[in-house]
Image 1 (spheres, helix red, strand yellow):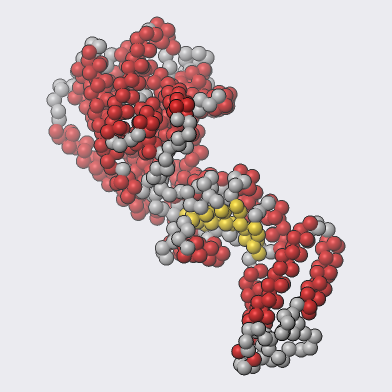
Image 2 (image 1 turned 90 degrees about the vertical axis):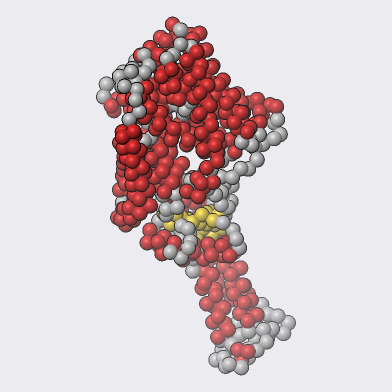
Length: 618
């Protein structure tokens, strides 16, 4: 079967299973696992090479960690040092010791017990973060703790792999300091290279790419960045996911952050789905049927031991019982790194082939149990305390600004400066990179990207926004953006800049809350100044402009109803002009002459301009 045919099978299987599981409230992960189970050797056997699919699909985990890094600036990571090294470090140490001890008690050699305990202590980054994202819990307290644990586990896999040659019976069991120092030096050098690339070189490259204004070139550059850094880390013996996370974190304050997130997001989603399908295909049904009690007992032991340890540690680190229980049901499964560790352990002779297959099956089934455990925990918590809701915990980065400004040209900048003066946070998006560089040099954070792209809007936090200001230059882009937001996010108030009257009508057709013609207000200001220069008082000038504005806005609403009838529009304009002239002549204060007297207005003098506001100049 060709790769294209396999890809088609994966897509069809996902389309058939994932919507069903989502509809049942079980989440998409179980749907993907079921699709993999059906396609794998255990059922239909349509995809023979499961290992190749699993290896390729691990890119989904890499992309996932890169996107998380984009949301986590170095300062925020430093703030998480206590849960990362404290909670995460203790979790790996205690779970590894407990599970390794159980393995040794069950008859494993001490070398095999060390490897088994260390590998089973690691959790699945893909499963945990996907479930957190689907439930909207990434920013909760237990979501933050889960991320801290997973991040430390990505680091912990490196020494675990380094121990393998020492524990192997093929080696001499002696620690080689020269090799260890060489490997450590290579790892440090690669990390420094990634930091240098991410901080300076990559940004310079992206500026060149953006200057071409070719979207597919930016996509290629983004993918090349993530895959290239991952391969570099893998060559140094480090975790590819850790390298991607580091690269994303170094670009977290880049002007390209939102565009990178929007570009990588679709690839991440597809490859993560493929990863879950590959895990489902790895299920060995024959082993389950021949040793059901052993398999069930090992899965239950793994989930119970890790769950108890995680719950206890979470409580020690200040989590509530509900938060600790949520964490304990989320991270007790085995992880994707277990596939790497156990495969290497079998090849090195640390584990027998039969034991390796059994442990891989236990890891796979523990993954499959995770969505069910999380769902049951949520159901129990809702039943026991239905009125309580998790408090608002701190976020990785504030993406809940009340205002989004799409377009940061002349109009967008004035709106932004006014909001900043009032202390109201906003998210600004602009597609002109030269414009972004100009305003960022002056201290304003603006994100690069096309604001009419749905993925970019989601990355900017459109779900939480209250107001969207459409200030883009392109009228068609403004219409596309307004139509999408009003259809998908009807609670967001949309204020739009219109190029002219016809553009305003088209925006009104989309249902925009308020439309502002870009030259209308400035033209009225000029007209008001003309009145003053002709000798009229400030009060008369303001009243004249206010009267015209009220009349014209009303006329615009009336003409909107007949906008497709040219003859009716011409007739309406003639009638409106006569009505406006009459209003001007009739509108007068008790002590003031009509706004537009029928006689000519004399040329103003310096004395006439200084008349009191309540009296017009003669």
